[in-house]
Length: 339
Image 1: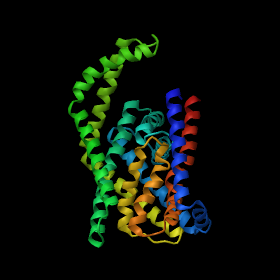
Image 2: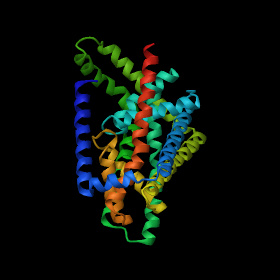
Image 3: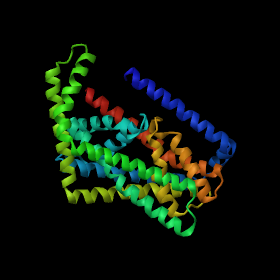
Image 4: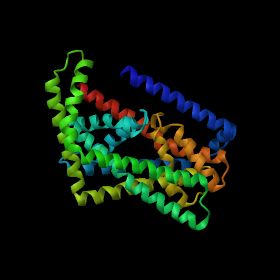
């Protein structure tokens, strides 16, 4: 790992520990531990089970996207690769932005496709996941508004989500609009700098040609995904299924600590809290937990210690389970690649 990446990971991990320490101090670490020790193991197991259902749904989503790119991957392999992708996202800063290159490498290794094809596949999955998540936010908040006044905190969270997603969509639209210009000019700008950083190990002209070809193939692959309407409908349906599996997992986590949470609250809480995954902390660790507590305490009226305990059970299924399984998958694929 380069020194810069190692430093960023270390600082992000320290920040995550700091945020979690502050959270435990504010809500009462002793109370949280007491609640966790009394958690119903049946509902804890259900939380993990539905977290696995989420991984399977989005693994099949990745397989469907790759199918539109003429990349054939067995069902079990696609699920394992997606688990590895989630692992990469959870151990690198800035969530998907940090993990996508690793995920693309995994895809290229198991399917023998080009790296840029794998990158187009995992990037398409991440972008398409936005559509159902926003729909759930608006449905959940809309129903909540019919039963209670929308507070400032929730209003700010929804506005932040819309602004962030709008900014991402705008950036994607600009890149797509000027993709031919980027393909023609960006390699010429970047290749001399890479040549200098490589201390003469890279030929600038050859590197420029290679980068141009890779960008061209990447944009072509993205276009193929976007024009296959039948597969797009299947992908969106699988994405929605994954979000709903997470919603059931969070509901089970609250049941494990002896509390019920309204379904419409779960629908918008998960996408909104996941916005904290864009922080420099690995996989949003610490930030996402704090976001859940800050969002759910005023909405549900449940004690902060109980909400923190439920969120920790939930994150055990959606964060730590993929970290453990994905670490095994990534290590195994790495060994096979070396062989």
